[in-house]
Image 1 (cartoon, rainbow, N blue to C red):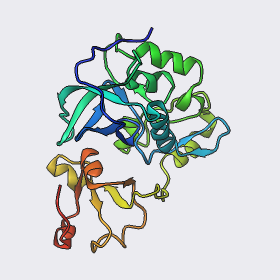
Image 2: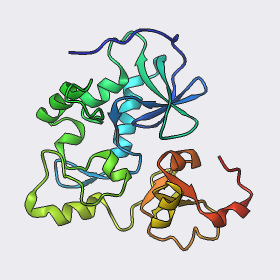
Image 3: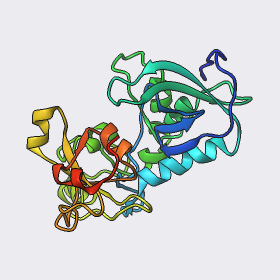
Length: 244
């Protein structure tokens, strides 16, 4: 059953979609509330056992859902995990279900509420049972990908216990390809955890950039990197780039 959300703010022009779980609307960056969507650089396996850029596909799915329509986002306050961002429930004009819910029901995001009665639990079950989106292949939960948990539980209809090692090598490649337009390199680092971060990011033109030949993550902007829990490499401070 589709949920209905109250129309608090007015509709605005089509937003800029950053990734499957984040969009910019009317000068505010919203993280879609209650869902766990793939990062832009996440890799999955499809139903033919091939590597699949599921993060890009999930982003494109959100763009297709919006399809040029005006969008309204109910602002639910500051995002406690990322400065300068808010959490929101976003809906396109003329629809009673949120974009948050559509993404889960189509299998391009997971329910992200711990309660068994989570808002989108039934939608996730529907997507899983019908092998929609991510569920047709094999993947790790987006939150585990973002944390670099290579031993995270494998999910999806195409996971094979006898291919566990091979699957994980695809989901967490040693040398991940750079997504289009996303040149910021990220590397998980224990020393970053001393400051409450999970890793360090490196910008083009910084001394450390060329030497990092096998990044763990790729980011499209400094804001995206910082929202993912990465800090800028200290040797980048002399680059003259504005710190967000």
